[in-house]
Length: 137
Image 1 (cartoon, helix red, strand yellow):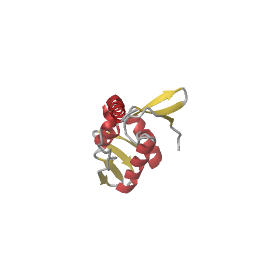
Image 2 (image 1 turned 45 degrees about the vertical axis):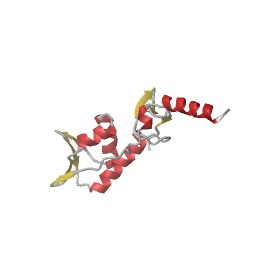
Image 3 (image 1 turned 45 degrees about the horizontal axis):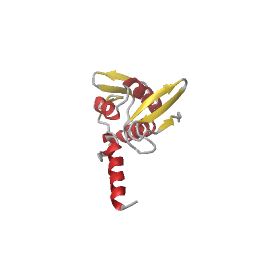
Image 4 (image 1 turned 90 degrees about the vertical axis):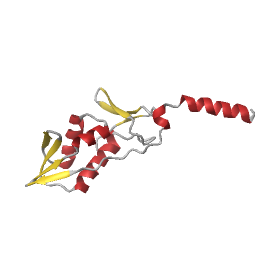
């Protein structure tokens, strides 16, 4: 095989790579913006967080509140949490959620979706094609 054939094969292979894999944009896990009123905490940028993570609100809230060990609900555009929480604690919980339910463990891209098969839950990556079972921690 000469160098010209090799370049041609590489070019053909590159053309077959999906566009969302070619992008070099770096995914950033959103940081919380909070407001504390008496003994309650409000995450004021909740919609931005959900949109960035691209996950169902109910799924996120169920896991997030369980990990935070509190009760809460959506109030308007905000997430209400019973109790006072520091930003770094809430940011760490969102990071844990993203690593487990959003980011692909193979290519580390957020182009994933949650799939259910019976009682098992899988994280399917649309960028690299990886599929991995989500284990509850």
